[in-house]
Amino acid sequence: MAFVRGIRGAITVERNTPEDILAATKELLEAIVRENDLRVEDIASAFFTVTRDLNAEFPATAAREIGWQYVPLLCATEIDVPGRLDRCIRVLVHVNTTKSQRELRHVYLREATSLRTDLLPQ
Image (spheres, rainbow, N blue to C red):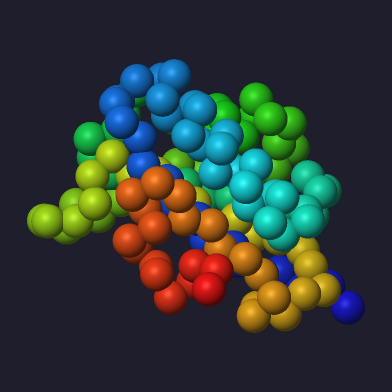
């Protein structure tokens, strides 16, 4: 029996440019798909957030560019907590899967590895 489960991920970018945002988002989503052996049809939806310093492009655009045409996508601004990681794109991908929560692999790349060290591969 399949369940809807969430997979988290995050990545940072060097600059607030459409090119950097799109490239980083594609890198993150492709890693999530690869690490969890997903097909686009497995993806129920994705929710992206960006820090306030990233507004040059929607991360959802990158998802569309890699073939997520029919996946419901939403973008928002992350809560601006002082002293937290800047230039960060976060995603929560909802997937239909038979895997348990412990079997799912969350993906944190670049400076975002500092966000959830407890979820990184040992």
